[in-house]
Each structure stands twice: as C-alpha cells, then as structure tokens.
Image (cartoon, rainbow, N blue to C red; front, side, top):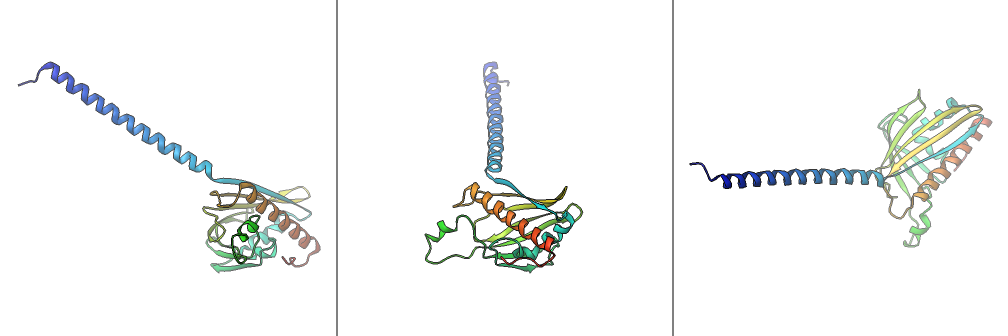
Length: 208
C-alpha cells in the first residue's frame, strides 16, 4: 500500500533538508580548510636581501658561492663550515655550519649558564650554474629555523654584479622578523665586501 500523501511529502522534505544540511557542512569544512591553509601560508616569514659588488663580474663571484662547503670564508662570525654529505656544489650535499652569531644571542645567554654554540645543517636542493642560482634548506640545527628555504643568485649589472638572497621560514621562537632581516642582510653585506676585496686584490679570502 502507498503511504498517505502528506506522509510522503514530509519524508521528501526531511530528505531534502538532510541533503541540504550535508552540503552546508561540506562547504563550511572546505572553507575552513582553505582559510587554514591560507593563514598558514601567511604566517611564514619571507624576505629578501641584496648586496652590490663594484668591479667583479658575476662569473667571477659565482665560483665563490658555488663552493657550498666554503661559506665560512665569507660569512661573518661563521667559524666552521664542513661537508658532511655528498660533494660540494652538487644537489643533495649537506654542510655543517657552526659558531655564527645572531641578533638574539644576548637574549638567550641571559637564560643560560654558558654560551651556546649556534649550528645548523644545510642541504643543497638545486643549483643552476647557467643562471648563477642555487637553493638550499636547513634540515637540522639549534637556532629554531623550521621549514627554512633560501635561494641565492648572482645578478650581472653594469660595472659589477649583485647577490640576491631570498628566504622563507616559519616564525622563529624568540625572534622577530626584523631580527632575521638584520641577520641575513648584514651577513650578506659583509660577504659581498669580502668577496669584492678578495677578487680585486686577487688574494685568498679574508679570515672571519
């Protein structure tokens, strides 16, 4: 027997409401996930630093940066840079960097009985000698850099060249974005000055 028309109508209405509410839940869940992904992306710090070298050409500067295990020759306060995996300058190689100072060291030392030695392990992700560019990530360390990725490129210009250093990282505990900008920006300026002096004088790199 067929049910009463009013009962069938109520059942159809109920089914429609359930389906409608299910669609609303799906749409709200999707919107929530999209907003969460957007917020996570916005939370990541991104920055760029650049330094000009007057005189040396890009092709002269590139080999100094391509030497992935030789960063201590140029970056200020970096006392150690050792290859721990692979061959320097080849994707996948890893360097161990230690002894560098950061803008927040004095804050951390106040909470510790003895000075901490900063260190990171950095992995070369890609390199393109034709475009004079490489990228690397920090895969381990004690300075709190998570999901850190940098791209470094030598850009030719009239009368010399410039080094452009782009970076992104999750917010670092105990740091401000300005601290990271200062750390990389100041370090790059010193690197560029040392490279410029070394190439112009045609002598070995200066000591840290």
